[in-house]
Length: 366
Image (tube, rainbow, N blue to C red; front, side, top):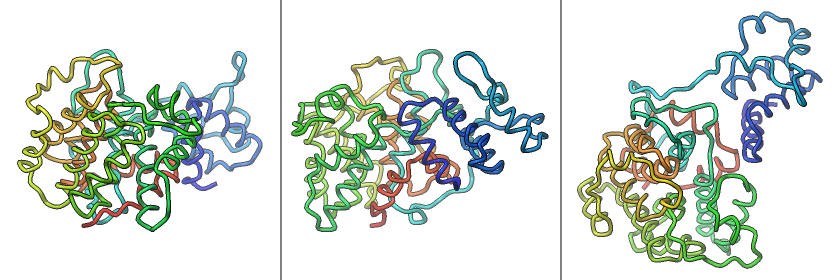
């Protein structure tokens, strides 16, 4: 197995609800039974954010195979779960940037989702934006899955295929059933034979919209495509508006509009005079709606000075951190047109290959 295959397998197991320790146990058995060699085994350990202790590194292959599991209780556990766990941390001095034209497709929404996933609805002290980091448990969620679904639908549509957005989105979501969907999406829409929109104004309409402005060739087409992919679930006027405003703000950013121009457009639809401290006060479940999240995401973008700063601002607000960051970073990617390479790579390595392929098929140069 290659490292890319390890990452794909790990992400698939996480999507099925397996813990990282359970995934490690699977690979321990594979190593014990000589289905993977030591180099591959250590690559998996590293991919999951662990590292072997100095004591374990000194063991020869045979001894390591014997000791990589500990029989404890009803199931075995990893012997090195007590070791120091590595953290990949966002640093303020990231210098190496990757330019918009140097990577395929669009990645902004996925970055916000993956980096924000650890902080979603966490109680306790808030995290200052300069301490936001990526964690071992950071992973893609429904935001990224549905972003890829919309991207795939549009790619097929613009190739001339006859495709139904409802069926495409259903197929993608069913492939990742444990990605963390909203209740009505999951229980009333996802597995229905003939699903109908459910009058939603949840922020899910805006979180999945990032591919639309990349395919659209005009503002009018951007509006039409946004409505087409949104109303299959979110047919409430606020749900449609939330997606449309983010799509058009992103389209404007792609095509060279200034922040003041984007802000003037957005203020026609939302109050953007928000208070950072108040936004950081905890909001519980039930507030994940366009009327709350979309103006906050716009605020984060407008008050940022780089893609990384936008990401940090959004995540530091917390509550629905992954969705807020996904929406804000959709616009930030289009506007700043460069991303720290470390942030890009840490995100891409956590994506399922199918998602990565769909996002990379989005045209990102205009």
